[in-house]
Length: 259
Ligand code: PGA
Image (cartoon, rainbow, N blue to C red; front, side):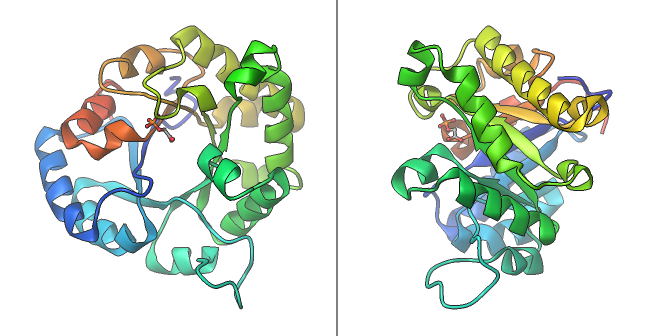
């Protein structure tokens, strides 16, 4: 982390877990573990049907509500989709885009990811743009070229003034939900490279101020070490965000209470 230049963000990704009726008990329990002040933004990206409950109950605990996906279209005949305007209308502030599960199971390509990033920005929602390599790509030494491609594609046509609303999440696919975390060196190496790509695209200042998160089996035990890396500005947390005690430990691992 580098709290002088950028925001630390701990974002949970509940994926397709939890009921709307689980939200209040979750937040009530989480509150009992949290310090009074926090040095990070705490975001929970919940299933669409849980958003209203999270907005209602999460507020007092300073939980910022996020979504997990958005339509690349403005409105119309897209059964099942939810638009960025609809998310913004109810108070959603962050939205995950291009998660590897959506890329894999819903054939979400880089063009679509880029279109979604644009819609979110148009509607004043911070996109959390996920990038990451497969195990095969890592083994073939293709990690950096793959990340480079994904970042440039996701940010294609994004103005400098819009970039400051974007968050990047480096999530190696082989580390997601596997219990196999990237080492802090691996996380730092790629997050540092992502910052270098942003520097090339937008210049030194924007690169210095963009928050880059690590995701992939981050938990209460390994969070402090990962967050101690200079280019890791927070976490995108799946499994461990479902347990209030674990999620609170990760929040506490961001350190000093200087909100
Ligand atoms: P995980 O998921 O923490 O369960 O590995 C992370 C993610 O998919 O965002």
